[in-house]
Image (cartoon, rainbow, N blue to C red; front, side):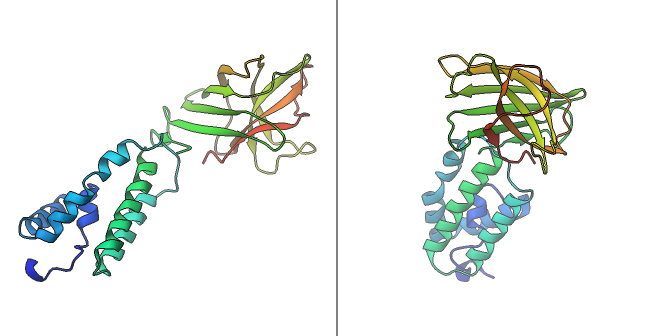
Length: 232
């Protein structure tokens, strides 16, 4: 289709601003851009989106293929639209999603093998306070955990907080969990931990913290204090 009757908004405009076009598409759009005042104005208006993405929140685990599906939806919306507003909204939505993908709560890198890093947020359960962030690093001999805890109530004398990897169907009567270690919290409600576990993260897909009696019992008996979302 000749440039002078090309559809507007151009279906590749959002992908161009967000750097999502392949080299051939990029060259074709830049050729179109050289002769199209409308698209140049759109690019100028949307050029701040990449900087917005760089200032996005720290990285989260998202479903596989979300980035590709998002751009496909943007292109469909742009191709079916003849108004400037819908494209701008679609491009902004894509930028926000890509910021999450590339970066909220869980970030993942390393392709699933040794050296993979996963970030988790553990939130307080009803009736409790506090939160924790954990970085999990898979290695040849298990999982290294760096955890920062804040806002927890000090553990009473004779008790400890215990960190767990939890599998499906876990109950007090039929436990399906592996301990990653125990810790204590003082008046400030904070703790910095380095733990190690041999837990299989394909089987134990949630992290949690409970308050346990300090009697060496390997089973969970206490209340759930903090719980994460699914690891993967």
